[in-house]
Amino acid sequence: MKASNKKILTVVLMLFLVSFATNCVSVQGNYAFLSEKEIDFNKEYEKKPQPIKAEYSVPFVLLPLGDTRVSRMSAEVIQKACNENGVEFLTNTQINSSSYYFFLYGQVKYELTGDGWIEKQTPAKKGK
Image 1 (spheres, helix red, strand yellow):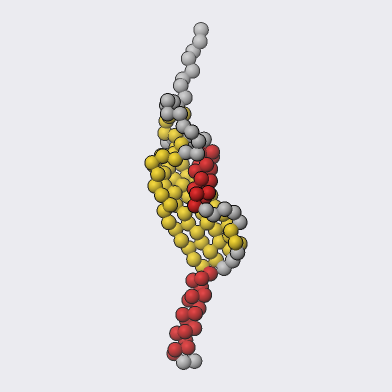
Image 2 (spheres, one colour; image 1 turned 60 degrees about the horizontal axis):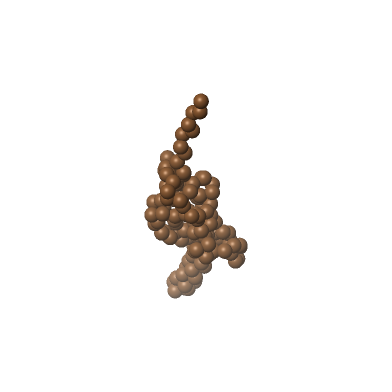
């Protein structure tokens, strides 16, 4: 086999492999305040001691098996973070998106990390 044919074969093989195995990670945004519901700021809130983490993903099998719009994926991961951790709102939040594809299968995933806030509980008054 000639040297030029080997180079062409190598380039074609590399393009083939790259087209079937790709991965991408990006920051969707850093947010000072996030919530999926109305917050009453007349109440007092306290920060949960541990950071809040949540993931939301949509698989691909040739085509996406769900809604992969950025607005929908972001809303889902925010709602999931609040519901699973029992928090009212999030602060100092970062949302990252990642995706990978391998041949016909792939996945788009959104990950959220931030500080969660819950309504401050007033101590019960002792009755007589």
